[in-house]
Image 1 (spheres, rainbow, N blue to C red):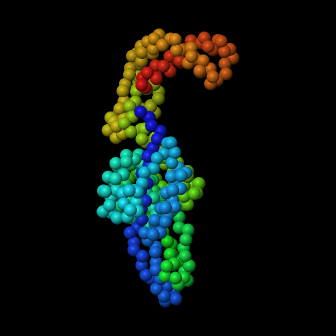
Image 2 (image 1 turned 120 degrees about the vertical axis):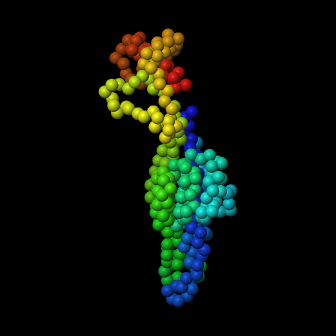
Image 3 (image 1 turned 45 degrees about the horizontal axis):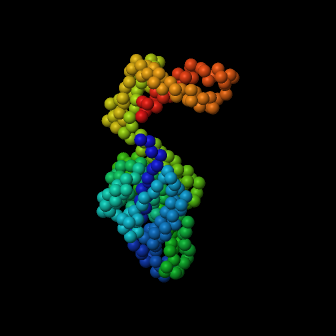
Length: 293
């Protein structure tokens, strides 16, 4: 059954780095919070509500790590199996790794491998860099990048390649940017296509036309690699069934012909309504519909 609804699991990721005291330019000791938990939480609390509000709809649903632990953020390799089990229980169709700061490529790669789903990677854009001459011990960035998320995205993408995870990414940007909107919507659309592609069943009517070698396919490979089954129906058998449908459902043909005529202009409407070619096309419509069902 074709379904146009997708469920995307969002897995926020941060680096597990404690705040450190570092010397400032004037010799005073200052608190450095680069890659810190607090900043990552702030980013998550800004980004996730925006995503839910602007991208969740009747076709796209999001699930997160909220409820898995207090922060709902992954940061350590030892968490990977537990996170994968938690997300799998919610039966998502795709994985979205949201890099809140430099992130942890170990846990991100392991979770993506265990989930074995289409994966999207995105890193937030650094916007606050602090004052390089600040003396306040609580100055957040102390003149450095607070998040360094783009660098972390390079590390995560490398480990995803090594795990042979199929993934794409959104360039580092603000969540409000058009590039983010386009990237997330494209990913949801491709996820929908892949969801409906799995375990597909194909009806093959007759052989391919002689000259169309481009229509060759490998039935074994379709089944082994993608779980796609092919059900052949010979040309003579298809012709027999078509004629049977045309006779059995003859009283439905005129209504379908009239519907056809709403899609194009005919020179003589009455002549078109009585066209045997259109009645045959209407019979084909019913025949194919029965095969699909």
